[in-house]
Image 1 (tube, rainbow, N blue to C red):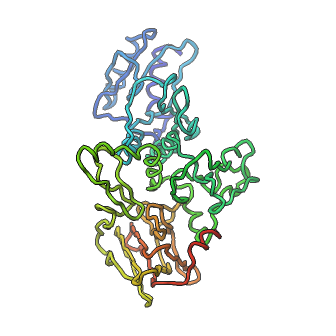
Image 2: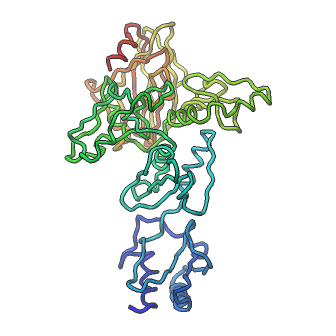
Image 3: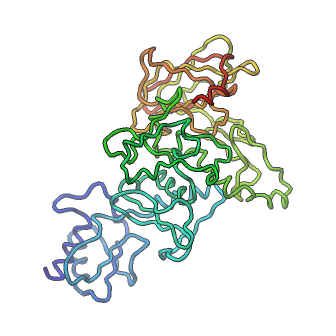
Length: 449
């Protein structure tokens, strides 16, 4: 194949695979000329002719540049004496989702990131590389003498939350299912794990890891999924306890960052980030409730970083509801009452026990919501936060409960329950009964889990 024919083959393959267009790839931005670079050993005139011919017969425009295109979209043409080929069909994924992931971490922590234009080999930092096979990292925590590498593939390049989970692991977060206290929350089925990958299920040592007092979070984006690294189709991770059935549907989710992920990063890196500002501006360190904590971002010192759906100076206030929502504040008494959520809406309701020392009892009676492979926050779900620490992701419900024998009881650890409903279709709903309760010994129950 001569050079000119090779160029046509090459350029056309960037857009289509044979006679069909490759639909799952990102689309090139054709509102501006697509840049291309030809290295010094190639034939500029032939390349120019090839691109000009495509311009003549399509709406596309091309612009030649004098440097290799490494950190922006475009086409690099290199001479290869042996064969005509390309390294990727369609447009390679841009760094947009990666940039979003880094900016999200900056927004919620004291950390700052700087983009550089060369691979980090002999210095600390994070390299993002394309890998057609898998989304993974090469090392948890900072490498001693070289840059860490995050590999991004088709499985995650469109998912900012997945990319955030990889960055957080590079920053030091270990898999949630490997916490030293994991045996209270999950079972690990070693026989179902590929033998060479069992090292990724080793329980962490208390002397080598720190939880900063934060409880196990089934909603963590660092948690493995139920069949992680299986070799026979069997479960490798099983949630246990009275709510294990529903937590099993949550583990492994990569749809929403849990509040506890950023909290761990902030407790580890940012505990004193605002101390100088407190002194210089005579600002009092805020008291934050419900699992919230002082915001470590220098632009927000003196405010609270609050759990999902809470805000305000002390994380007391609920985010405003939309149409069709029940009253946001309800009181649980000895009388059982019904709360109903309906239709397309985004609602948050707090139920508080009337008497001091009482807990809230909820019975989820009926719901009809979208079904997902992993049930977590999204555009259709029902979440019940029943822990003292409202920063932990609550029990999430998806799909449906329609029979009384499928109803599920939840007892709060303190005198408050936070209910979050998001409905996407007019036919969706969630119903629950509630009252106050006295008879649960929560400390003993927690130890028995």
